[in-house]
Length: 330
Image (cartoon, rainbow, N blue to C red; front, side):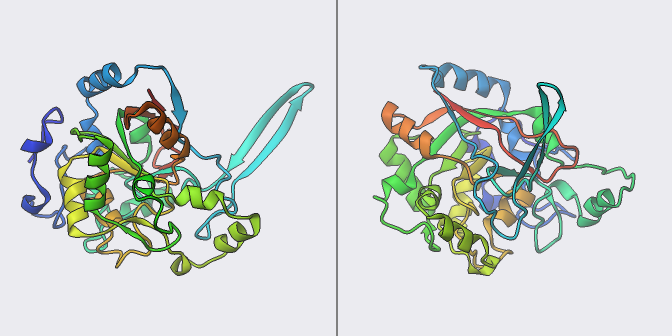
């Protein structure tokens, strides 16, 4: 099955009725062709971009959505810290050099980041062996396939929608616990904010994670960065069938949050996690560590929760992830 990206979610297959195609994992929705590398970003069509630009850009206000590359600092989950060096190249002239893990601050998880744990497939049929061949420097037919450069060459522009779940909840939960944000929570928050979803929306969820992190003393940040992966507990989206139905069937182009993991951490299992569905099975990019604090304030100020969202990932052939370089425009 191949979908028309200009079509509407109401006519697209629901998750519960996804057709099984021989040689593909159960639950896969590889609808955009055998050579496709951008998945749900296909929904960001010129017509949708034109319509969103016309409807959403009214004041000219811009809100950047990337954290500094050294935040969180120290880096979480054993990842390397950001390093920045400035070099003199002559009198009055300088270059600088950066070194960092693309998953250590604001990021897009690209399709090379996570395979379906059950089948071993990455999105659209790529296998671990294909990526390892790139690591070894081998020339293959799938060299650099599914790299983040595919996002970069296309660009990401669409209607962004912020669901400020933390504000809507009255800040009644601790984002540094495994608080499960349910699909019903997202629906209720959308109703409270007067939001109606459209096919190809880019969904942003404010969980309060960054608000809580920003309140920590330096010593507390350092202690938390030293923790083993299993010792971290954070609020995020619930990895339930209801949530998967909501995310899949609404046909969002991508989704991101201010949290470290997007979904509630730790998940019940990697097999049942949202990462295991969204990235390899649906081709739906995931954003993490996004700075949604200023966006939340701007949306409340203007009384609207939709905007033009732009993102220019790094053009790194075969890259796994990238800072989003994202902005919301009103």
